[in-house]
Image 1 (cartoon, rainbow, N blue to C red):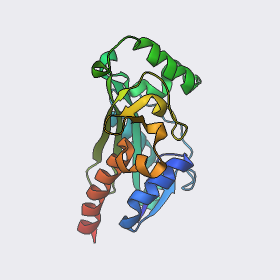
Image 2 (cartoon, rainbow, N blue to C red; image 1 turned 90 degrees about the vertical axis):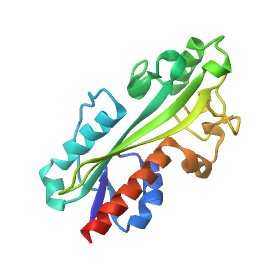
Image 3 (tube, rainbow, N blue to C red; image 1 turned 120 degrees about the horizontal axis):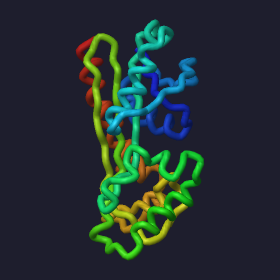
Image 4 (tube, rainbow, N blue to C red; image 1 turned 180 degrees about the horizontal axis):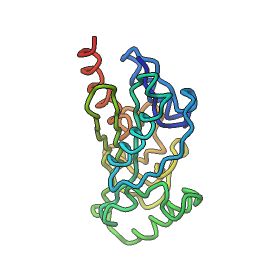
Length: 205
């Protein structure tokens, strides 16, 4: 049994393999599985976009022949004061080619003068699984926090420098990779998916 995860991000694959390793299954990226496809993510939620990606890949003849489980995720940042923007448009906010330094500063500018208690936010990650002969599985993981007054930290990427963890009073870009994985939205979603897939595997075996 194999898992194909709809990503080409090497760092993401490291995290995925670490969390799912005890499933005892080979875990392949799209490239490693020989999958090359452009997918239009036009869903209205993180869950819909994740399912669109997983379904598109699962329907490919070469993937169907492998009888692999296909996983796909969609994630982003929700800021409550901004009506949960940028949300599902997080990667495309202010344009896909716009640097995150610029995106982060734009969000900080929009929140200028807003007190901390109204700067609540969360990272969201939805993961969908298309499993041969089984109903699709969708899980969600989050990490709650707030948007700080300025960027901080060098370890993360994307919106990490402006997203602060309340109990640590630091940004997710100031956490070590191990600390971040232990509490991140993607880590939480992967752990939830792991439990779902364990049940499926036990039923199959």
